[in-house]
Image 1 (cartoon, rainbow, N blue to C red):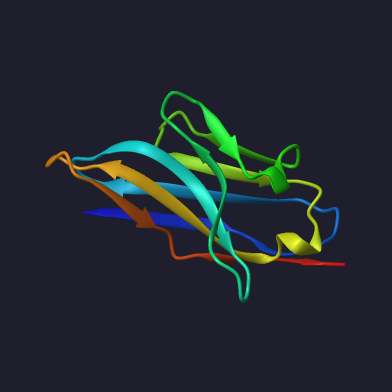
Image 2 (image 1 turned 90 degrees about the vertical axis):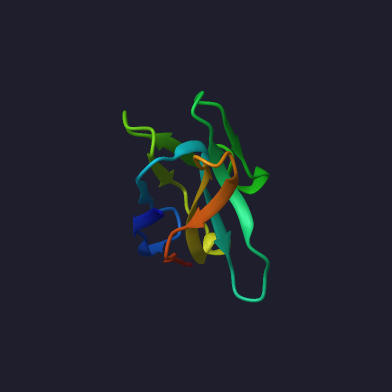
Length: 120
């Protein structure tokens, strides 16, 4: 069983910054990738940023140059530093862990979600 716990978020004015944290824990799994998704009201959930164990990253075009995904030395913890926030970044942000189980099956695990609100 894998648990994904995230923290951070809140309310900030446009141009401000916030940082999200996420840790995947449990037993007998390895990480394929960890990342952040967001879902705004009335919209589909979209990828914001992701990182693989190799350190390679990818970002949504809308956040490039403003958001940075990073990890702790323990590769099952990732952060999302969000700078120059815009009102359109307002959404519920979810941490995702794409894991490889001992059965060699892969599975997605999700954090509980955290609200990020950017006021204009």
